[in-house]
Amino acid sequence: MTHLPDHLTPEIWLTQLLSSAEAQKGGVVKRQIRDVERLVGYDAFIAEVHRRGFQAVRNGRHYVVFCNDLPIRRVR
Image (cartoon, rainbow, N blue to C red; front, side, top):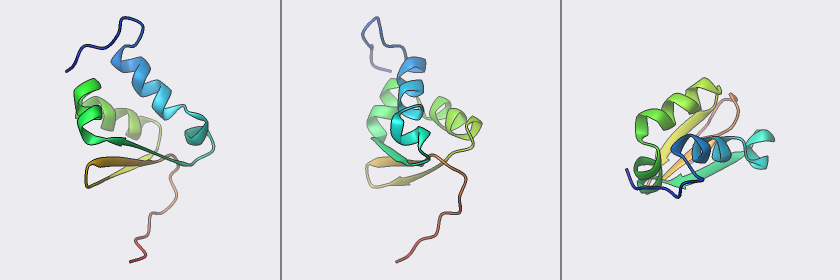
């Protein structure tokens, strides 16, 4: 994993992402796969998404996190 500035740990980065205003509204957040894996690691990311009851999908170069437990339906 890449070194983060001293004030930003992987845990803080992950908490900030999944506690953002959009996440608190039950919305959607996305991050590049390379950033997630470089900064916090796949296992930690998925564990925290699961712990919060959120859902995530991988598409192209992004992880997309649905910050709720509502059904995800593909429309096309």
